[in-house]
Image 1 (spheres, rainbow, N blue to C red):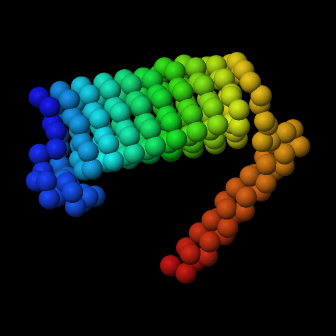
Image 2 (cartoon, helix red, strand yellow; image 1 turned 60 degrees about the vertical axis):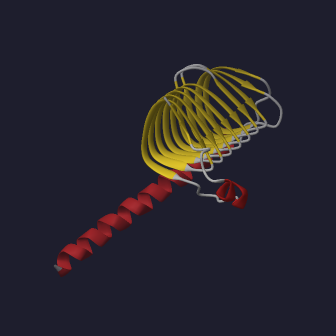
Image 3 (tube, rainbow, N blue to C red; image 1 turned 120 degrees about the horizontal axis):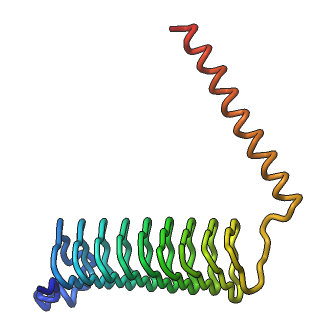
Length: 196
């Protein structure tokens, strides 16, 4: 069964409506959505073009100029799109953004960014930026930046964001900040209890 939403009247297609349709739940073998969206999609293959979804469970997910809140997929491909949380077997990102990626296999990032990327496999990063990354083997191509990197093996030029001095200073400042927060919480808690 194919879920295809190209059956709109010609007037609506030519009008360029950005929200041509929205489905609450879609369940099919192949789901293809163009300029629309769905809350929950469960399928063997999902293709989103200028579309969005809240939750996707699929073997293959292709996102082109779209966005997804959460996706669970064996294979995830994102081109000029965004995702908040991805749990995938393999991942390819091109000119895209992600918040949290948990990946079982290999990752290929090209001109993309991620806040957190954890992968059991290998990662190839080209012209991309990542705040925290943990992977088996990391290959860094040109103009790639990673703030915190944990890897068994790293190939390519590593630009350390924190050297030994900066790391020590960061640890001291983080400890002081945590201490101030805990101390103020304890003081505020005692004053609040006395008034009650």
